[in-house]
Image 1: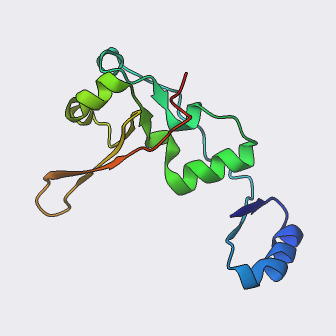
Image 2: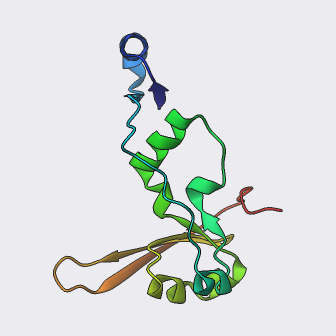
Length: 131
């Protein structure tokens, strides 16, 4: 994907990249979107949750806001090996998306029965968690 901040640039990229089917997003400066302050409760901290995904990288505000709006990075938490062992406890605290050095956990709530289901995918060779 490409992110532009000018309609002319967007149109130029769309025209030239059309054969490659690459998404072009035009950022218009949505000032209504405000990053939520990071709140890691003591209970979350005790599980090894350290931050949100939108807090761990630097990018121009246009890029960051597009990523937050498209991928909900401000609702995705980062945890430790301890968090990985106790992932169900993280969900009990309201965490619905969690990255650990070993796995990416996603929980969803059924619209009909209200039950919670989870998907777990292994994280391969993550440099983000290497320290």
